[in-house]
Image (cartoon, rainbow, N blue to C red):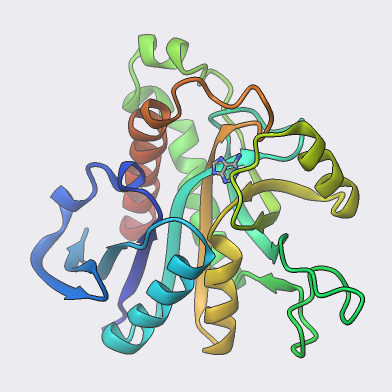
Length: 249
Ligand code: ADE
């Protein structure tokens, strides 16, 4: 059967999901727990990778070689890199790039040396399926959040976006850094710390992957006051509902 790998960077991002996994077995490999089972009738392996590109790449390799996953989905939070995007919006990556890769002048900025590649593209079928699952979720937001949560977290007019996500081993919290990145990458929608590493490993193995991100902050000095509370109370329920829609469709 087709197995989906589900990767999370932070514990708070996967909050609540494990309780839905049936026929669970836990495999301990490389200091991580790989939770194998079924989610809404579909075989999955869920794992907390840890934060950053190395953690994500290492975990992706383990999912491929120990569990023979057929596709991989990472879900979590990201900083907005475009004024169109508000906290609470959802970004589904179409393209990914490592913003801290820079071997210039030997190779163009962002290019992974000797591969000729700087951008990785998400497979269309998986992208479309997640887009549908996300739009279905947005339409039914009010069923999953109370009126007071919608007010507290400003979830009145949540939108989904699709485009370029950049990953790097930096939590971006400085408008100058963000502005410089945005000048180099005018289409940039969001920044995070894992997506493009997963993309590179999946590209090596011709494996489908998707990166789904809830905007948690605007990657500047105003970074969300209560980041972890937002991740737990907003981003994690988003992930749960979107994955449910995805697996049930
Ligand atoms: N994940 C969530 N917000 C982020 C930010 N501002 N920079 C990097 N990764 C993030």
